[in-house]
Image (tube, rainbow, N blue to C red; front, side, top):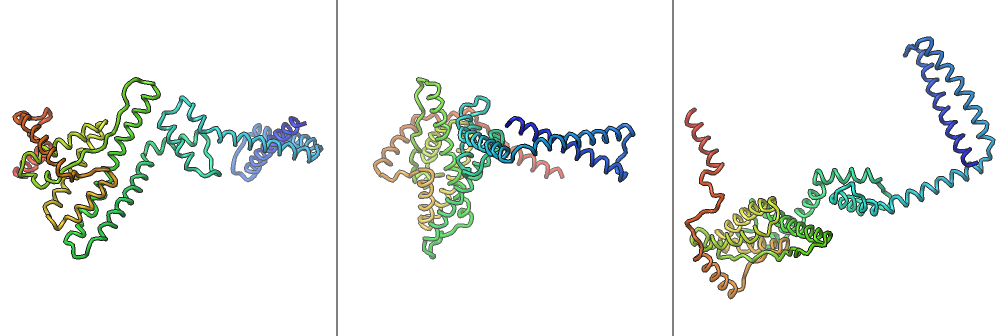
Length: 351
């Protein structure tokens, strides 16, 4: 009986569609909107007649079946579909994990999307992966996270500045007020990226059951304030900064991380030097900058005098052993900017 009911519903629907299509064609023909050959017109009329007879026959048989039987069947089908749908979404994460046709990044992004969705919203596997691909391709999640992090850092920094007394010379420094939160954000993002890269590497070691030692992020070395105080006065201040920068460079795993760190270091050093040149007028402002880096980057300054003296001896000994007659391999006296500047000057001189 169940098969008969479903078959009759299918036949009724098919003939309803035929009747509708033929009726529309004949109406359009009569209105002069379309033109059909006599043979084609006869074929449409014949199809309409046969479909009408078939529809009436199947409808009569269908109507003879008790309505309770049809209602019971449709309720049964509805329940089966609901259970199948529930099982489909319930096993969705497991299906994605086991799939060998999608990348690890796609799997992770798809899992995050599923965790974000409310219980009444579902995507099928294909739709879910398409959304994941768009997020990965356009880096949407990272952009959103960075915007959120930036607002948090900016609000925190502004809040700390507002606590300074109104008569402080450097309560606000227009350029740095907007620039410092960006530098802190970039520094924080770099450290997180290094840690994520290390975690991913260690995870792959576990999956391969490798005997290689896992990587460990030991944190950033402490910097020293006298480097900024004596910069341009003492070559050991240069060397201390150089060695400190080089240690963090070696912590960077990818080339992109090294490039980013080079830019962050330049910006951080510029800010520290500007504030250092303001002497006591910038002490409060400088302290807030340092605390922001300690909070969001876990970067600290060495303030223990004994440790400072010990590091001074180490830097002195290393400096004494350095051969300052040799340059690094990538040394170039003619920079790209120098080339650009020379071309501009020569062009101006010739016009």
